[in-house]
Length: 229
Image (cartoon, rainbow, N blue to C red; front, side, top):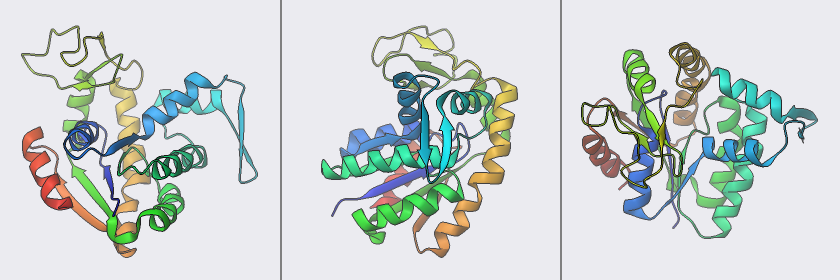
């Protein structure tokens, strides 16, 4: 049976790193909402309007929310994600999802689709826990490569890196999104809008695994593998 692994946690918890490791090790498709959203922003003009459930969502308005750290409108995200989930299911892919669902609205809309396609017993949720202080430290120092969007963790060895050691493209900070003030907004959004998902998913009988995200990448990866196997 095909499987879905949903990884969530606060900004900087290592969702992307763990998803990439799982994708490489297990051969699963990493469905990252930020990439789906960014691709939409690049592909569609700023005046493009999406009509979803009787509401209108303008691309330029959604992009403005994104850049200030406020979560993009959930109906807009769900519309993009469900289309992609169905597309990947039809291509016979196992999924690793990061970035969405991240609100109650999103999980209420996406979970039934995942249930129908994959089956509840084949859905695993990995909850990576880190402190607010760790979030601020990691994100304010994080660099991401231009080509594949690898996140390079800060250390004395990587501090002066300007090129991604994995694909050779330029390393850059995510302007606006990883500024300290924006990170504080993102943390507030996470606490108010994402954390409530945890109790909802437990009540729905989803397999939820809490993991300490402050350990090394290798240690966290070992715990993730144990949880989903």
